[in-house]
Length: 155
Image 1: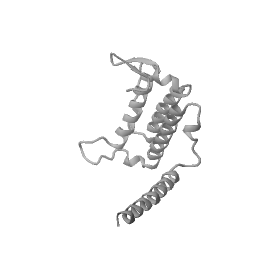
Image 2 (image 1 turned 90 degrees about the vertical axis):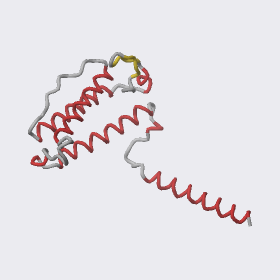
Image 3 (image 1 turned 60 degrees about the vertical axis):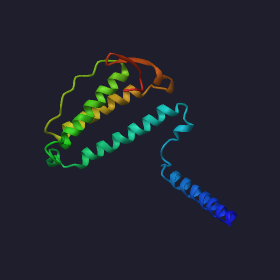
Image 4 (image 1 turned 60 degrees about the horizontal axis):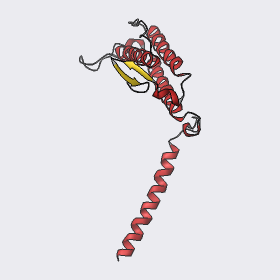
C-alpha cells in the first residue's frame, strides 16, 4: 500500500515539475536576449528590466488622454501627472547617483501631456546614457551617496 502511494506521489510530482517548467519557459519572450548567455548577464538583465519598464510607462503616458492627467483616485494620492513627474525625478536622482554626479536641474512639466512625455523621455535617455557603458564589473564600483559609501548597484 505504501509503495502504491509513493509511486502516485512521485509520478504526480514529476508531471507537475515538467508542466510548471514548460509554463515558466513559455513566459520568456523569444525576442528578448538571453541574459544568461550575455557576456555581462547582470547588467544585461538590468537593461532588459529598465527598458521594459520605461516602455510601459511611456505607453501609459501616451494612452492616457491629456484631460485625465489630473485624475486622482483620492485626495491623499498623487495625480497621474504627479506620478509621472515623480518617476522622472527619481530616475534623474538615482541615475545621477550611479554616475557619481550632481542631480541635473529638474524642471517639472506641469499641465501638458507633451511636456510630460518629453520630460520622461529625457529622464530615461539620461539613465540609458549612464548605464550604456556598464559591465558587471562596474556594479561593485564604490560610490559615495547620502554620506555613506556604497556600491553602484545599491540605493
